[in-house]
Image (cartoon, rainbow, N blue to C red; front, side, top):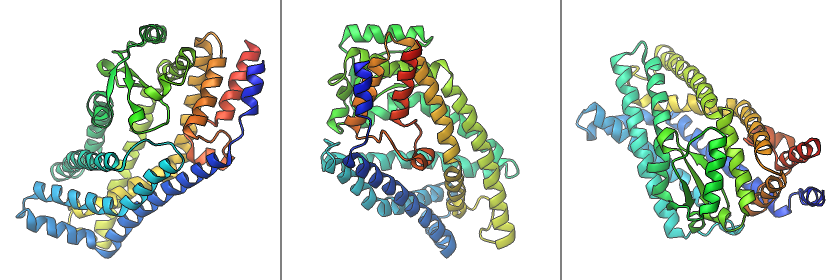
Length: 380
């Protein structure tokens, strides 16, 4: 009971934490606003058509090559506009002593992100406009099926292809902790392909852990910042929460939710495109890739409108995962202490305002998660 009382006593946020999270929220809002503004300007001024014409002339009228050049120009313009905010975010992490990353490393990560984004965006956009040309009446339905496949494939490949581009991983050498985590995973009914140490400290002072991948790529990753500062019991509690998502099939359910949203999104994009072509003559044809900013705009607005509902669904899942953790560990005290330590180390808000939690947070407030653990301990 003394530990519970101490945990409750430290649940208030520091002024530093509130300032950091407030600035970070406004930074996210500003980034969204810049992106939205760019899309609106491109469409309202007709500059998207000018970019299309430049791409066509440079590509000697080769459609696929022109699509690639258009995507490249769009990404470069977006990157140039976004760099000041991204650099401010980089400095923000240093100002609050949350980052170890040097400027050169950050710049290299930015280059890698741009190249990966270009590859992925090119594949997606090329497929999208290929379908528009081949099956114009049902392109949105065909695109929905392709995108779902790409989404699942990316979830499988991310731990073995994408993550190592930015971070170093190595097999965990703590055999006792490894054994405990594998046993915990087996009790949850999932088989992991390994437990890995994640060298997060090379870039960040924050701590994290995750159960990543699907099928043959499923693995446990533990940040070295977690391994160095948390007990085995606390790490086991953190992983038990992650395994709760597997037990409650949250990944599968989220795929179904995303599938429904994506289907509606593609249908809506098709309707908006036809309206823009038929009523306003904004584009020559459905497969005129100058309409790409309009497609992105539809997606961005839809995502913004659905964000509170999706965050509420995510918080529901997180509460279920927490309850599984309470059932799976010998005591809830390691969960409570790990939540408090993570909040302090990551400078997270433990007591956000109601509207901030409702709109921005995908996890319940830490003070609520700790209270739920305390309530569980009193009953059990």
